[in-house]
Image: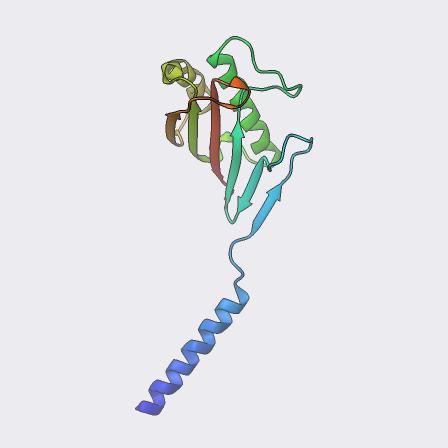
Amino acid sequence: MIRDRARLTLFALVGLLGACATHAGPMVEFHPSPSAGGPFSPSVRVGDLLFLSGVIGIDSTGKMAPGGVRPEARLALENLKAELARQGLGLDRVVKCTVIMADMADWPAMNEVYVTFFPGVKPARTAFAASQLIFNARLELDCVAAVR
């Protein structure tokens, strides 16, 4: 009986060690910017999740969308959509968004634009205000998408 337990324990340990030795953890891929956009990756894939860096309503020339939070939200969401497309995904794969706003009074206007980009099932979402965003943006979006 003791010999059988020892044998089973040994088999279990060998199996566990073999599993640990062959599993190096989730795959991590850094997706650098196609242009020199700053000291960050626009997206990073870890396993089946794609983490997208925060996006604001700035165009390819570095100019903020004029006209307030609605045009900024539209361009930020277009920028998000473009990075997803670069990774072969669409907005339908977004599972979580964080909306950082310079002024929560802009929430209704931002939301009017946001829902047009997510007409079906909506991703989980968190929102909060910050005292100042980069380039004096009115909002920044940070999202996570499912790859599979």
